Image 1 (cartoon, rainbow, N blue to C red):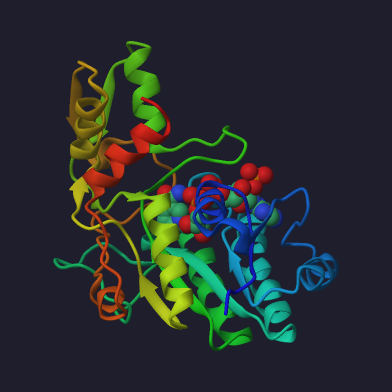
Image 2 (cartoon, protein in one colour):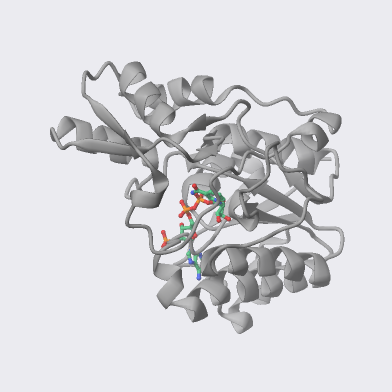
Length: 282
Ligand SMILES: NC(=O)c1ccc[n+]([C@@H]2O[C@H](COP(=O)([O-])OP(=O)(O)OC[C@H]3O[C@@H](n4cnc5c(N)ncnc54)[C@H](OP(=O)(O)O)[C@@H]3O)[C@@H](O)[C@H]2O)c1
């Protein structure tokens, strides 16, 4: 039977879920529902009679979270708890999305779902709290961890690493990019498709979803310029020299074995990048 899916949050992932899911998906943006507003959640969701509720909203400003922990925890931890509780009350499955930043980054191999977590900052801690609360209030939740998301936003106003590199290169600004921090960039459309596949097979618990392969942010930036046909120099720099306020994991590649055992194979990040550049007509 076709499932009625409510997606809360209209950023990169929410927009991609609405595009891929088509008529099965109702996209609810922040103007329609603020997930920190407990009283508003159950009425808003029950009106849409969902079989599945996917939380694609988040407070993603990693550095700003260090000085605004109340808002980071309200959106990334308490909000998901409210959504999970409401989904359970409506007998809907809950899907929550988390981050590679729950890990400390000292491991030498990709992180599995059960590896010990070690959040290095407020954003990471708030996302980890959100995972625990989602599973506490809705024990059959699917909790997806992903990394380095790039995609289109509904409003067209959102930013991501790809757009930022393109913007700086076109403006002739000097490009300096970290060459000792490794992760898997992930195209929002590929992430959305994988989440909907997991929803279709009724997967629950924690599952890692990223594009396959991995790279340093410097390698990713070089690939962006190559694929876009822009000739600009990029200086590789060390992470220790950046102005980041929050600490981030140096290595946060996620192991995809569990995802693959559930029947989902991910395209390589470079393939995702090419399709994203086509989508935004670069
Ligand atoms: N982006 C990444 O690189 C990355 C990496 C790892 C994990 N993730 C996770 O992946 C998921 C999807 O991320 P994304 O890249 O799609 O994020 P995004 O583009 O920043 O979208 C987040 C959305 O959440 C909305 N939102 C913020 N506060 C809200 C509230 N109180 N109530 C309702 N909506 C609210 C935002 O609305 P406004 O536009 O109005 O602010 C925005 O539309 C998130 O869980 C994120 O933590 C992302």
